[in-house]
Each structure stands twice: as C-alpha cells, then as structure tokens.
Length: 362
Image 1: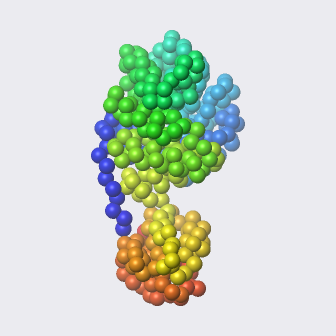
Image 2: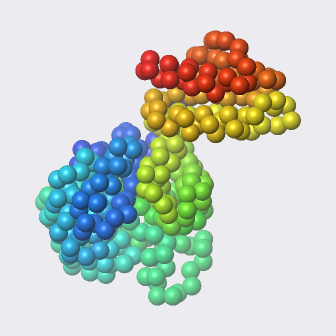
Image 3: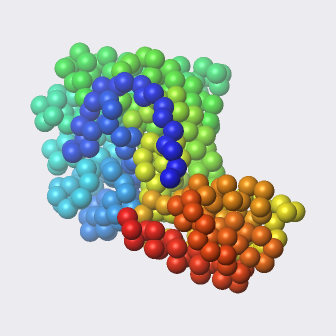
C-alpha cells in the first residue's frame, strides 16, 4: 500500500552483461562479490547460488592469479547469474577471464600501466561482445600519484580524469560497452566523484563506497551515498560493500532501492514508532519478535506497529497489516480496515496470523 517515490533517471547508454541490462530505463541492478578463493570452484559456486537466491543480479569474483582464471569456465557454466571477473594489475588475466566466458571484466586504471595490454583486452572484449567496467577508487588514484600531496577537494576530479582517459582509449579502439565507477571510502568524495562522472559521459555508472566497513557503518555510508545519488537520478547498478557476509550486501541494497521506490520490497517492511512517554506497551520487544518471526516471508508487505493513539491509527491504516496499541491492548488493522481488538498478551500472535494470511493472498 506504499506509494513508490519517483526520481527522473539520468539517461545512460545501455550495456548488456549477460541477460542483465545496465543503463537506460533498465531497473537498477544489485551486485555483490564472493568471499571465497575463486580457484575453489565448488565453494565459489555455492556462494554465487546463495547470493542469487537472495536477489543478487550480478556476482563478481576475484581473479588474482592463473588458477582462479582456470576455474572460471566451471563457475560461469554453473552460475544462475552473470559472472564478472575482478582483475587488478594483469591484462593477461583479463584476457583469460574473457576467454573463459566472464560476462564482464572489471579493470582498475589506478593500478595498471600496460596500455598495450589494455588495447588487446579492449579488442578481445569488442570481438566477443563483452562489456568492461573501468573502476577506480580513491586509494588507487592516490597511490598512482607516487605520494604527491592531493587536497581532498581535488580527489573527485582526479578520479574522473583517470577514468575518462581510459574511456577515450576504449572509444578509439571501437569499444563502446563500458560501465564506470569512482568509489571512495568517505561520503562527500564519493558523491562528488559520481556527480562529475555523470556530467562527463553518458556511460552507465556502478555505484558504491569502497572499504565501507562493518555492517552498521557500511549500511550508513552506503545509504547516504546511494540514496543521494539515486534520488538525483544517478546510478544504474550498485554494490553495498561491507566487511562480512555478502548476503547482507544484497539485502541492504534491496532495502535502499525499495525505500526509494526503485524496486518492490522483498519481504516484510516494518514501520514502528520510536517509542516515547506515551507508549504503554512493550513495543521494543514486540517489534523485535515480529521481525525475527517473519524473516521467512518474501511477499512485499508493510506492517505498522505503533505504540500509542497519537499516530498509531493513521499509520496502521496505511499499512497492509497494522497494530495501533493502547494501554494493555491494541487494534488490529488489515489493508486499512480495523479487524479486532486484542489484549497485549495476544498482540504478537494476532499480528503474525494476519501477516501470514495477507502474504498468502499474494
């Protein structure tokens, strides 16, 4: 029952990564990256499948050495989603990844100096019809400058300058299928770099924050960066990088897109009040238990759990299922209509019963 927000999209070039379209009017896609050693193909494939089941559209795997490249054909063949090879330093490994069937290859201009090798990669990618992502991060840009002092306000422009140099090389080689990214570990630099990049070209942009940290910090930093840029129409695909289980990257990415109205919610979206002196039930415990008990539900439902009569009835009526609590009791709502009054001891059971009934209706 939530009305999605609408944001004008920056109209970018369309690039196809396997069956997934990036750019243009295509939905913003979600990416993640495996944490396994890619050369262990069975382990890597198992994680790829878990990510796909969680809603990941594209999965990137690290290819730091030849044995990882040699495992790619098996991974590509067994993956339910397009596989992207992440390459640093070695254009030879990029060629290997393309030959192995990777749907896209990521290269970092900040740590590659082999321009002849780059031209060979561009030529092979063009012949095979596979896109490339040129992705810089602030650390690699600073390292490339050999210790020269860079003012923070100058870093976004330097990141974009490095990317656009490679874009000009690619275009000269007849390779138009490119995706770009310019990530930093801080919010202002990342936002400014992507704004400049959006002005500099019509290529699709992969959004993210590099080295975003553990889950709480990553959720906050990614929410600020992705929310700001997507609300400005900037961004065609994204990854929420975090130190932890990559499944959480996918779930947080879905939350961000859903809250912006850019894709449907997956599972239960709980709306609950922050509690105050007016609250006369144990709302914190109720909400925590409700969230834990509904993790298995995939239907996109909004459930409102409100602790007092000030905003409670209105919020509860706007949700698919709602509860407006008073002293020792609450009124249960279903799709905007009051259903029944329940005592506090029965609130959780009544909420779960109603949520599962609405979810079953589809």
